[in-house]
Length: 255
Image (tube, rainbow, N blue to C red; front, side):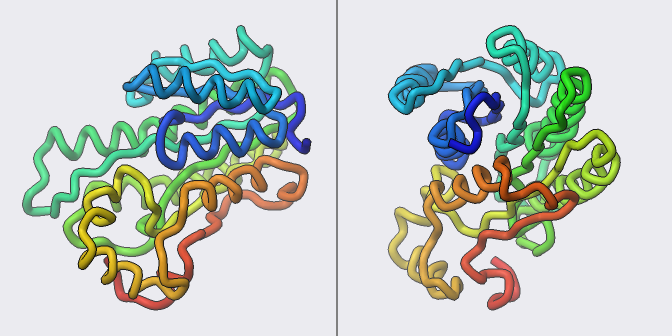
């Protein structure tokens, strides 16, 4: 297993892409700290699944829009497993509101959960990686919308665009420390954030038709990219984004 002895932290880790990332990293031998804000029962079930793979997992209830909670998350990883090797900034929300509709509260919440958490998650994890030595990996779950407009979802696009530059700038700044920073940009994924579309047959058909591969991705398909980036095959990748979108960005003017 390529990540045996490594310790990973996954924000938003008990559902959707985050859950699949936890399982993919554990399948490669990593011990995992699972951040969550709701549904502790789902986190406990995920801990059991990781244990069945032969690894350890602990759930930490933390609001990653708060720097104190992020610090507690990393501190818990260190106190439990003595180090942090992989930080996956995955937590994300959206409002599906346009620039004319978005309230200040909606804007602040999306930018705090999506971008502020990734910035300070990167900062705090990087400080720990530097202190312990040996480098590390920081993987930001962004979106095709870090680069591709989505009218009617403006705060989300702004947050993902910010993550794009965070990934590039942090990748350059942290390279001398052996810390690699890479984004993973999913397209349309079958997760709770797309549940309304998946439940509407007409909307789902339209979406599938816009994707060259003809279907939404499964969360496991994004998690496999994350596991690769965390492993020994990705030692020369940093300050960039890997898009996993089924060709969506090359075929359609925007969704």
